[in-house]
Amino acid sequence: MIAIVNYGMGNLRSVQKAFETVGYEAIVTYEKEQIKSANAIVIPGVGAFYDAMNNLKNLGLDDVIAEEIKTGKPFLGICLGMQVLFSYGYEVEKSEGLNIISGDIVKIPEGNKIPHMGWNSLDIKRESSILKGVESGDYFYFVHSYYARPQRPEVVVATTEYGIEVPAVVQKDNIIGIQFHPEKSSNTGLKILKNFGELI
Image (cartoon, rainbow, N blue to C red; front, side, top):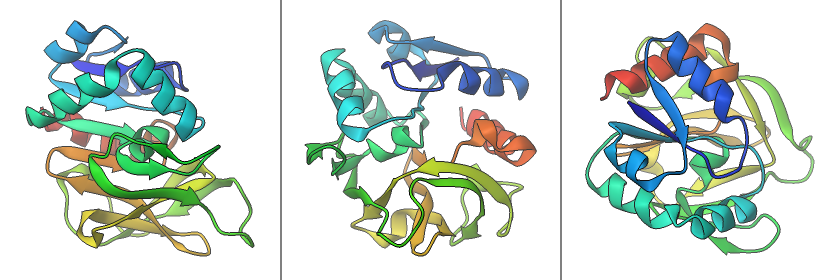
């Protein structure tokens, strides 16, 4: 069972449907016990870092997520769900993230159309089971105005080019973050969700 964390941000049902399409049972929940008993956890999301962290804290889910990650169970953050894994975000005002991956979430520089919205190709930097069957040059759907600047470059699995090099997939042990939306990225996106399910 995969728990999709409902913290009031974004496209929870479409992520659930995408997992069901590739054969994995997923529930949308904010119940702590359901999250703890799940075999894997997903935080999706669309919106602002500041709001996301406020919602997670108000629901008491920030501590639950941190505890469950320490158990080694597979964890996936999608778009905003990836960004909250980092130390700080600078959207609205500087606010603390879950600080599971060291680094900041900063605005895409001026001179690039913001938000970054549309299909971009991946440049795979290192092997990861999450990208099994995916190749450099494959396209995925992005929608974001902020991007991750990790402190340690070795967490970056794949990037995309958008006037700057944007980390598109990051990984630290059992924790995977994806800046694009696999649930909106056709069959290649479904492949990634299937790969995640296979980690359980």
